[in-house]
Length: 185
Image 1 (cartoon, rainbow, N blue to C red):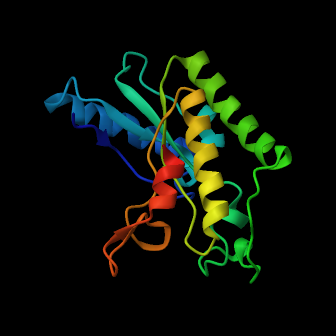
Image 2: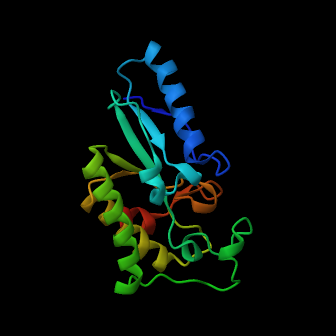
């Protein structure tokens, strides 16, 4: 199977209106040579799930999977990464998996599920993960919870990433992070 992902993490300056216009134009072009190809359509504002409701589609176009990214809470998933100033506390942020931590995530995913049911369009969580600045136990708890929630809500999902700051594989040691892989099962 080959899907076309039209635009990963659309720039916030493009906005929902600009993105919808671009999607409409791209779909017309693609359908000339790939009339039956499944398309992956990302949400506005860097692929945030809360922007699902801002998407519009051609009325006769149903071979689409809508994709959002999920990295909340940022203070945990992106902790102490210089390119995310709001997550720069300089301290280790743990994720215990308390009801208080879970309820906000479940509420967000319930919103996505409701949107999917109302529109008849499938949802894919195209990226989720936790940077390696987090402790392994918290990372494993979070990954396990998130993968369970995506399945429970009927979403397909993809972990970010194979290597690098969020990686499951260490290129230097040539080793998989078995604890994270086990948490994802």
